[in-house]
Length: 525
Ligand SMILES: Cc1cc2nc3c(=O)[nH]c(=O)nc-3n(C[C@H](O)[C@H](O)[C@H](O)COP(=O)(O)OP(=O)(O)OC[C@H]3O[C@@H](n4cnc5c(N)ncnc54)[C@H](O)[C@@H]3O)c2cc1C
Image (cartoon, rainbow, N blue to C red; front, side, top):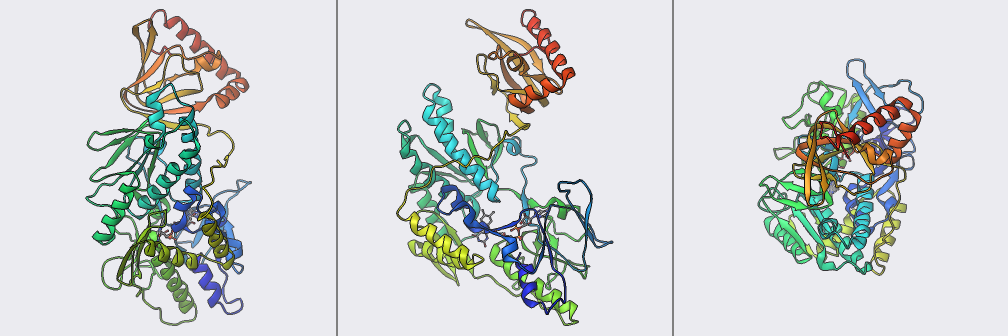
């Protein structure tokens, strides 16, 4: 967005055409995204429509699927029609950012909330409210209630600290509206793999942030690495289990898959290797910036992945493209950084600005003022300023924004000993085992009888759905298991419209009903 903006400013008449391809039709001001959790800032106030910001740019709201460096083309995803959409370029700027990559971390893709874009922030906010609504009703099952009011955030860098600060303030504040929830029941945990949070910051400021969070009730656990997750707990590398229904992970950030796929020079961590002029090494018309690029810093090392660096790099890329078109010499990247700031919510922050270290209210005031003026467009700045002013007097908003529709087929992860469902539960989903194993247990009186072991490719949970009954057995994981789970509504819709599927499930169900009398492999609830 910033490259296109500068290119618009530098253009003489129709000297060149600027085309921006972005997945969304808006620009997200990420530094303020954590405030969406608490609603301190309006949902739409952290985003700006690209069409308004870039009146002189052609916008393609599409996902880039592939880049052909030899042919100088980009293929984007399909729209309403599945025909190929190919764009030609003379200069290519890659600013794809990074992705939160949970691969290799058991259960995280299924159960952890990432925190990178607007929909992540909105989903998390909705989930927090839902967890409290459920906790308010859950008076029978004490363990479930404790899990519902336990919130875990993994990653003690800037994003993780800002997220945990906002989340903690929000849940503790709105909990006062629930008569059946005692604020002392709420548990907020921050996991960080190193010896202190905010490793990028001066130690004194990081310790201040840690103290503020602790005083506000956050359980800061250092040298604590998240290793796996289920829908019921966070599992740490040292074997500790934290029962919870909410897990947010702001780590790890990995190279964008599209960047991975390009035959361009990269550093060890997968960032595009660029020279001091921001051109990707060994290329003349490909430029890269921001989080996906390894940009040499003027005083050695690499520029950190922050917005303040990305926006300066964007200006230089635009200037160097124009210099190339006009046959002028390119400039080199010389920005050293102005400082670092992190908000701790509730009128407190830590900041190092021009070498001066400040914390508490003053840092918070500086943080807000700087970010307010960094937001693109006066209209947006005015809205945010009004939101912030009103927030000083009004309580936080508690409205869940329904995202509509069912979640459809989802993946779930279970650890040994964990129940998928319990005998007597309401049948709400059907499951297909992708890997691992589970045991089917039938409970009669005080005895528990093992009926079957289920493995890869087998399904379970269909009987209660087909016959509208409750679960007639318990299914418990015996070996770390990944499943596909299909909600009742979708399952019944498929079964009703695919007669073969319906009859094969009914046959399976009839065999299994017989199997509960004489245990067989493949029996189920
Ligand atoms: C929660 C959070 C808080 C932050 N706070 C601060 C802060 O306080 N100060 C600070 O300096 N920095 C902060 N940062 C970091 C800062 O936001 C990033 O360094 C900066 O946004 C990097 O810019 P970028 O252009 O490289 O990537 P991004 O801003 O991530 O932009 C990448 C763009 O590419 C689009 N895209 C990705 N894949 C495709 C595709 N296949 N097709 C089409 N479009 C695609 C995305 O939709 C996105 O618009 C924060 C980041 C986060 C997540």
